[in-house]
Length: 256
Ligand code: ASP
Image 1 (cartoon, rainbow, N blue to C red):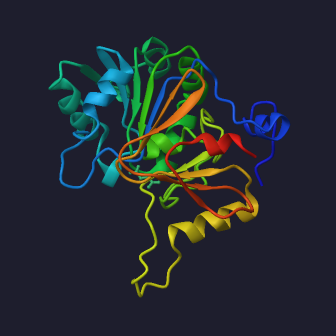
Image 2 (image 1 turned 135 degrees about the horizontal axis):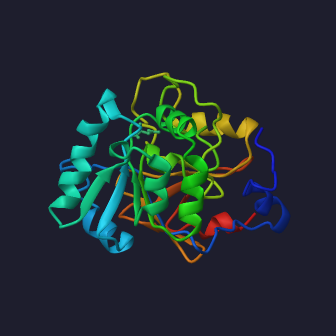
């Protein structure tokens, strides 16, 4: 059970019955990097550039999708942003990663395996550095695993725990959890394994933070303390002890 502590945003939920977000945060929390039928970041690149407002981006490749090396993985954002005249450097290219985070103009954490990502961030002692940078207003973009870690913890990732992070507690920029690539149950399916919805209901038997099921092509933009849902689709909101609801905006999260 996630409990409220001074550093846990959940306390805000329970004490003031409000989901407060630090007004300094500038977050672009995307369900995915790639939508069906288009290239890496193609669907979001222009909006991302407008949002990040930076001519240089620090990319964090630690989630290593499909086991890609840091260099291999960093090629993708380098190419996507490079075509638009924006320089991307991989965090692994720096001998002092903490300093690189401290000096970043914008930070982008890509998807892959969420457990591996969080474990690496803990091992390199970058959790506090990232929290400080984002609290200072440095824009942050996450896709998928990079979005999962914006939540309170990584308990609602779709990934397998292929490695052990020292904790599931994440960056906690958002006072709720994310389930990226949210997939609706297929009413005609003969598959008997759990649906995504079933798994999130199970999560709520033991954890109280809301979960935002973010479908592919959707993103949350956080600015000045408020979180806006962007993209063509609705999101699915799960709250402990309540039926899931379909929303066009995230206002409902403030109602408890
Ligand atoms: N593996 C996903 C990603 O692409 C994360 C997730 O599905 O939870 O980063």
